Length: 328
Image (tube, rainbow, N blue to C red; front, side):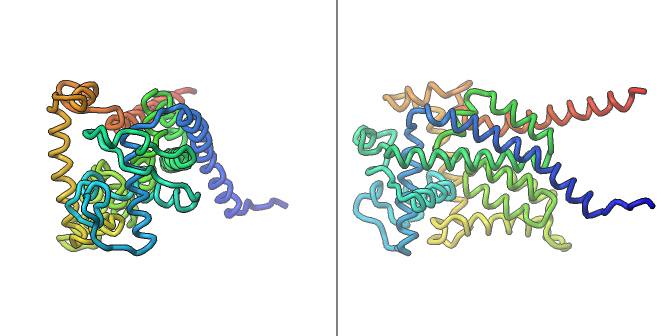
């Protein structure tokens, strides 16, 4: 008597096999990035991220929405036009705020400032236990992001991730407590939700982690219309914008979505300054990271490098499959 194969067993087997690339990528990324992060010196931008996360995270925990103090750099409050409100979205900072809240660690005493020597000393350093905790969370976010990409693309994702992690600057950029690790997690969630109703929400939340996530919004517009009306594509971007606003508490005092326009405008102006400033110590530091006159630090490059590697590995997999198909 023949026994018919239970279809539920086949489904369970496929699910288990699909998890193998995910776990392989997660463990590989955790091992490589954790080892790298332990040896990296503190970066000024890291100090800014951790201090800002501690400042606003503490205020949110106390439901303190009172105005700031007399010194806007040290106590900006919820002013939507203060430096801290417009220099970056708040999403990644809140990841580190939650980390410090859970681990009981503290942010730096004072915020770091690239243009002011008074705010570049030991008073702006991230405490050692806080540095370990926040960097581990950055590494965990990046590793989960790569694992989600492998969940979407299978072994192609594993191969691309492995090649990606061999790039020296990638290991240092993803091993620090700033926006890169959370951004990669957002991109991974975007890859996992692509083709579903949830992609516009993921696109909005990713842009709340770093403005680079705005690159997902055209994909939401063209590939994920919400509804069947003539405005369905616009509705998709509207959902992404609403998700961004919910994940950006600093935008609430300006009514939510309009604050994104303020951030983008400020970012454009800042980038022009970073690409042209030559005077003083700060100008010298910026000049070291310019390419053909444009400010281009390595952490601006890794999303493009990851995308190129995914494309190359996909093409290689198709070529191998075609070769196998032609064999007798």
